[in-house]
Amino acid sequence: MRKLKLDELNRASVAEFKEQQKLPVAVVLDNVRSMHNVGSVFRTGDGFAVEQICLCGITSQPPHREIEKTALGATQSVTWNYYEHTLQAIEKLRRDGYQIIALEQAENSTMLNDFQPEPGKKYALIFGNEVNGVDDEVMQQIDWCIEIPQFGTKHSFNIVVSAGIVLWDFFAKLNL
Ligand SMILES: C[S@@+](CC[C@H](N)C(=O)[O-])C[C@H]1O[C@@H](n2cnc3c(N)ncnc32)[C@H](O)[C@@H]1O
Image (cartoon, rainbow, N blue to C red; front, side, top):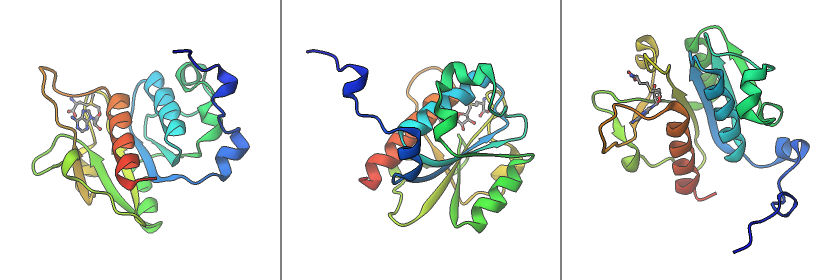
């Protein structure tokens, strides 16, 4: 098989991306430490056309060389906002009609395969710090906790891998 050339991929321009239909999802980064992870979340968020990314707490903000190394320009296409505390982001997203969901391994979490997003609803998906996960205070404010099943020896997935899995799952289930 012949691999497609870049100009055969027919990607949207940044201006076209801003106007196109979005996955009804806001990605919330709760104190994510690595700028490379932040940049990769931007690239993944661009790929699945998320509505916005909320950068919270110690999560670094564009423009930054280390974020761009993995974002590859996606900081220009995906709308983003910064909040000093993740709880402020949650408050705003709830007011704007989003269901608040943490991605975490927690008691009584719902396995990703058992969660069915509903057309017409909007979802804020919170991803946690590389070491501590989603903040305990934040865990008190959520509507749902979704867990991605794991079958190997490691405790958790890398945050960006988990974001990729969940965004694809929502995209596929919403049949967009
Ligand atoms: C490297 S993990 C954090 C691991 C940390 N030891 C903890 O206590 O949660 C970073 C983030 O990725 C997401 N994540 C990783 N594996 C996951 C899984 N199996 N299910 C749901 N979310 C996961 C969560 O948002 C988590 O906060």
